Image (cartoon, rainbow, N blue to C red; front, side, top):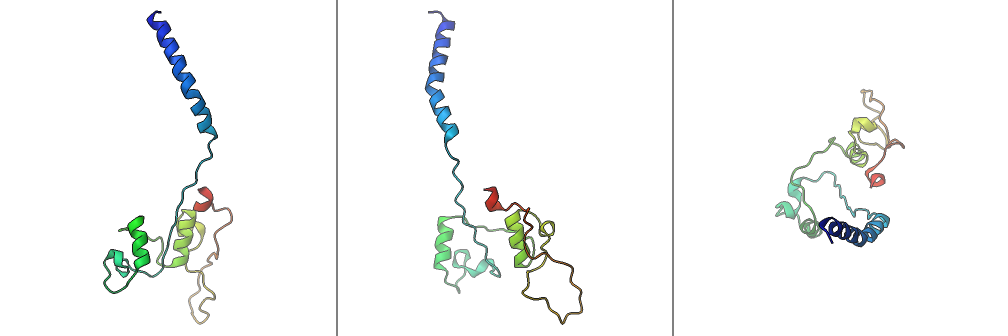
Length: 133
């Protein structure tokens, strides 16, 4: 057996061993990621014990932080909750989804300021992170 015939036989043998695994790998359903995202309004970073608070006792949040991921730096797209939540869900700036202020139960009728139109929900065509995953 010459070198060329040996390499040909070895290559065919290796391909025969690997081929069934390649076929099965293509059929495997893709596992979706397991993500728990917790967003808390009006909480400062020193308000929980895992970040150094000696005043507030937060054992459940501390346990979650020790078993998962902690953020030490963050950015909120807007200083109020509704646009920030919409921004996180849609993965776009609040102005892109049209929600730039909190979603009120009623606006302040006594104010002289005329407030610009503000969307009260995400547009139906917005693809949220949950849909993308």
